[in-house]
Image (cartoon, rainbow over the protein chains, first blue to last red):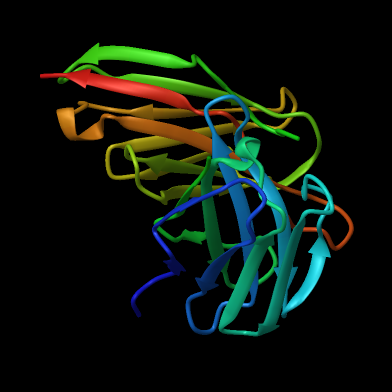
Length: 114
Length: 113
């Protein structure tokens, strides 16, 4: 397996634009996590899916952020409209089960909003 | 919100020395995991210790867990320059059906050759 695949690797966008980040989890994994990493706040859990269903979205910063998982092999994180403070590295991770096993991370998407 | 807090925030040692990093957490856990992150890369899982375990080994890594103190430590023995990275602890809370994985802010380890 190629591991967790995220796209794009880098995204530079202007404030106010819509940004869509994509994630393909490892085949067979049924849990998917979206994280945001900044120097100031560290690694924050944004949302967690299990069997394609959002279980906990309490980390989503505000209504500008939304995430979907239409099937077991694809998830998106959308920011609309984007703001400079959204600049961060966004990671997707997947695992098998419900927390009893290790999570595998993608390489991340570095988002810069100017 | 962060569940785990690593200590120290940064650690600099010489190659061959041992490195110890600590993690404290707040609520009851199902398990605790340690991850490593090289600069600009994704996190890589190192070791998982369950709440009913007290110690675990993997190669040069040794992890301990003290649930009464809500703390864990990661020991890297005979460190190498290639061990330079950030190390994070992550917890999975116990109880209920919410098994989200939450991370601390990490310890930046520098191993000088």
